Image (cartoon, rainbow, N blue to C red; front, side, top):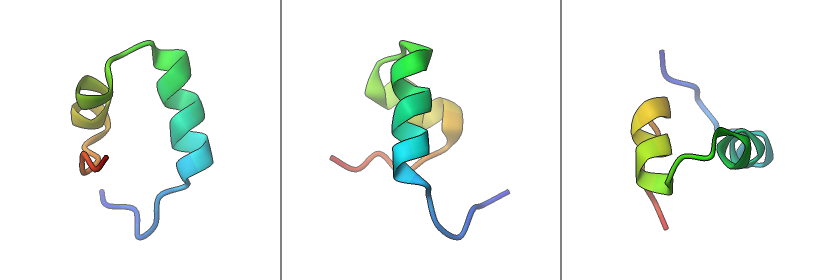
Length: 35
């Protein structure tokens, strides 16, 4: 289930609410870890 484009503001909001570390969150969401 791959989204063609990532809604970064929404992802970032969900990430800050999730309280996970960034690599963990990316693994959870199967995002490419890029920073």
